[in-house]
Length: 48
Image (tube, rainbow, N blue to C red; front, side, top):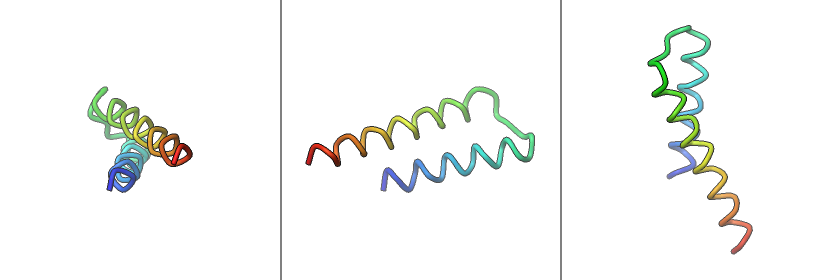
């Protein structure tokens, strides 16, 4: 579930870059959150 949300956020960020339509810093904050979520999931997966 979290991975799906992270992927959606990354795709929306890329669409924002391509279409030159950005919502200021909000979309970049969402991207950072998505990357952090992915990293946490990878780290937790390796510990298990």
